[in-house]
Image (cartoon, rainbow, N blue to C red; front, side, top):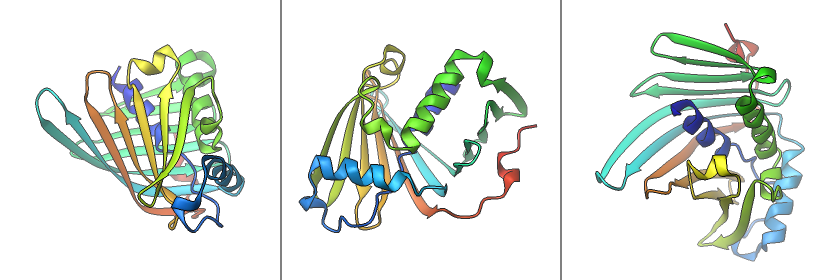
Length: 213
């Protein structure tokens, strides 16, 4: 269960940066915003960023903050999502293999033999290519410009996703041309916020980052 929830959060941060040409957020229509994402996806080869994740528990009025780093490379469908503080957890997707490492234990899964991870791989590619904003079988989508930001509100349609969250807001900075914040609201009122920092698009990433052993 823990792995599946973490993977859902990973997927929802992987929306590509926007294409150039939209300089004023308030002037963009929903159709223009989605078209900009689609144009940008074709030139996205790699991505590296730091992230800060804040989990807000509604019943306990408590906050749990963790930090880490994410690497993505289009060639071979490679992804590394790594929590570094206050605990260590690493998820690596490399082609048709997945590795999860936590507390000294390493698990390796072949996606071809596991339905859940096949779906994860499919959704990852859908998100990275921007198709998540047009894949109506996965989400109901509302896109708007608000207070200098572009905001995509995603409501999941698939039952396996609704058990983890009821709504996701993706917040984009059009001037910097990237997604900067993901807000995930769960059915019980808990909220997870992921802020992306130090984003490097199309940076050179060593193959060893995605090694599975």
